Amino acid sequence: MESKRHSTVDILRSLPGVFTSVDVGKLVNDANMFLYRASRKGYIQKIAKGIYANELFGRKPSVEEIACFVRRPAYVSCEWALNHHGVILQVPVVCTCITLTGSVGERRKIAHAGISIEYSRIAQHLFWGFDSADGVNMATAEKALADYVYLRKALPFPDEIELDHIDVAKLNEIMKPYPKTTRKLVHGFIAGFVKERG
Image 1: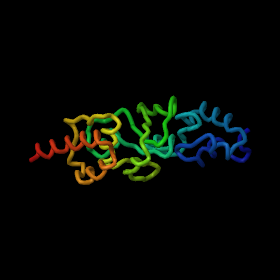
Image 2: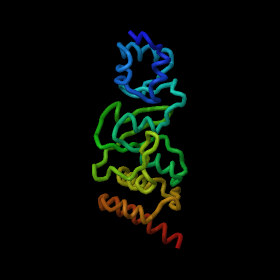
Image 3: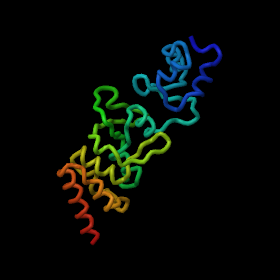
Image 4: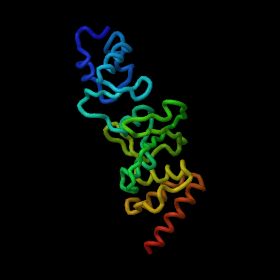
């Protein structure tokens, strides 16, 4: 049974743009029934097990907000962050989020608004290099490039990288804790870019 004092709409308006079934359980007697009814009315959208987008929040949560909420701690990186910073111009269809824990099944890859959100595990000593704002942790341009090469073992769209948006000195510093193979790929590319610009 829902809270006797508040309607479904009132309760949802008190919740953030992305919330969990646990959040709902603190406000109503039967969270499962509440979520079922709210879903049928189109008030909420299921993102992953126990996680929902609130259609009554006032604005739809961004892909980045959802990505960072579903798995915590996490930060957005690789091609998504590179596009965000203007390093690559091609709009990605995958939002890669870096986490500290491994996962399988639904929580490793989820779909939202036509975008695939994928989670990749990284070692604790490499989990840094991002800025936080409004519920989103976004890798810096340099860290996103380092993560991309580390995880994909290749450079993203070599002919389309806008290195003017990369601070080479900062990138060299960021690369220090990465494996030698990753450093070699990045440094070789940077050297070629500098020589070409000569």
